[in-house]
Amino acid sequence: MVTVGVFGAAGRMGATVCAAVAEAPNLELVAAVDPGAAGQSLVEATGVDVDIEVVGMAENITDPPAVMVDFTHLEAARYNLAWCAENAVHAVVGTTGFTETDLTGFLADFDRSNCLIAPNFAIGAILMMRFAEMAAPYFETAEVIEYHHDAKLDAPSGTAMRTIERMAAANASWAPDPTVTHTVPGARGGEAAPGIRVHAVRMRGMVAHQEVLLGTTGQTLQIRHDSYDRTSFMPGVVLACQRIADLPGLTIGLDPLLGL
Image 1 (tube, rainbow, N blue to C red):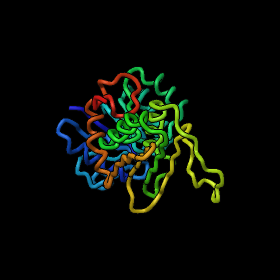
Image 2 (cartoon, helix red, strand yellow):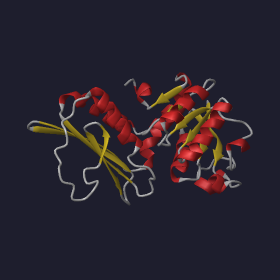
Image 3 (cartoon, one colour):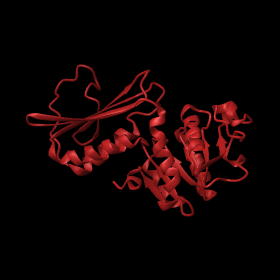
Image 4 (cartoon, rainbow, N blue to C red):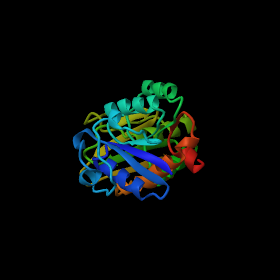
């Protein structure tokens, strides 16, 4: 049995993670952290009927679990991961926006426990990125359009950036953008890697969606993934909690757990 705690437990993603962990047969939910719900029972804060009390800070956890899951925001996640490394707790992280400096620090700090950071925990999204990487060498132009709910603070999404990084590594030669006149600045999106543009949509009613568009003479290929509910991420989160002990140090993405 793997003991698990959740940072940001009272948020929408945090509550969904709490429910998924509580229902997984080989995981045990033992800790919940959320400053906005400190002192409440977990069922009051999230609707998940597990007999634990939400605490305000990681330092308030009396018996650290084997794994902590973080779906918070950037500054909170930096603090939470530092606590995990210091206390030899594995970290499963869905927060995005970390810099290369952050990642270098995590690589150094997690020497007694492991850290897995995934821009997307939906299995379909992982496959979408892999398919885009496989297709990239056979096309001359590519653009990525990502769509998220209107509460997402960063743009482009971590999934979009990771997709583009992998496509750029697979093909370093993309056709130049022919646009000469920009009637509206930014209409062509942002060039996330040489020759690959990204467009970020923020709209109410959406959760997380992405299209990868590739084109060459006489044909196009469209690869799309849609998450209609936060539960789409939970099989990946549960898998990461179950297997993170097998991934030494810092791991980016779920790919190693899927054999990709």
